[in-house]
Length: 473
Ligand code: SF4
Image (tube, rainbow, N blue to C red):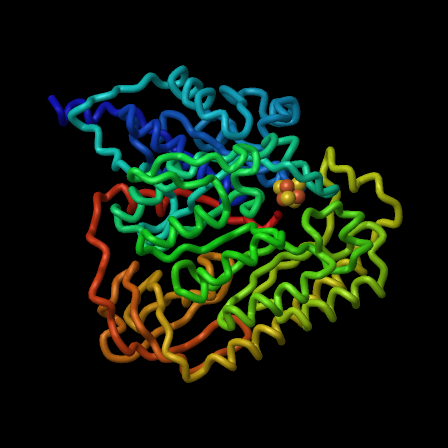
């Protein structure tokens, strides 16, 4: 009977586009549907219904979302649309009138209801194999941990607050409980995300919640410290340079959380930042960075920048180039400004010519690559911890504490025993070579602890398409 029920389990496919926050939404939807007995499939053709989780941040992302919906319609025909672009149902229905339902971002209930309508659940409690940590679209050894939704800022180029609402933080005990379940399931690296990580808890007035009999405040520092007790790597993304960020730097130096900050500066010139309406006092940021590096010399800073923002002059752009050099930004992504339907910046005068934007983008990336090349070369000879992401017959590919998955560089590890490693192993390697992006090293020692192999749910997720364009904050 159980086998018969398994064979009849309805199948759901998912296409997850956009940022890491959207990816976490997809994971929550899949977790819920799996708990109800749905089978998750990586193929359009075998699915009874396909969910497309869209991104609506940029016009190019909207075009990609419409294309993905079109592909799902052509190859399957039973499609539920959700995510940021879902708030613009008419554009979706103009292009694809026959989608089954359209729901907005983090409307989990509505998506699940639409799936129920398309194909009812066949829940069998004997077959309920959903792990307590939920389902994840990332490899088994790292996971995104979303600590809040929404944003209270009003950056002029951004429509995220309109799409996702005001800051809505999760209680600290909630976040810590999820983190603990992930670590118990074998996750070695927690990637803390939100729209504005350093604003965490402001909406809750930093209320405490009970975690293992002790109160933990919903505050950036308290949460970072508690996460640092779990024995996993903890990496902070989307942090703004507010003064209270200074307090987490000692945790990095003590090895409790990773010496890594992902700060989407977007620009450096005060006038451009004002036009962008960026949060936090950016004027003293160079001094702050210098102070952070005095406390934690190993700190790596990743950032994103927008070039060609309306009104950006050559002089302001050159100011940015000098600033990036002075700040010694380890890793950076750059975007050429584009209008987004509904964004306040669309109305700004003096749009920068497309060729000029391209030229500035190339100059910024070239300057950053040179900084990255020098900073990576200075690490040659050091012995560092590496988390292994992949292994092939030549050795292992992993990352140091200075590199986040998918957006930063990697380290290729060779030497005796390197081909015997497994994804999720944390090892020590000596850095032998570097270029402007990646490192090459030799295995020195394996750590004793290794992931236990969990259920096979992870293998299917690798077939699920997702797009990690998570640099827009
Ligand atoms: S860019 Fe980031 S901080 Fe600014 S409004 Fe958008 S989500 Fe908020």
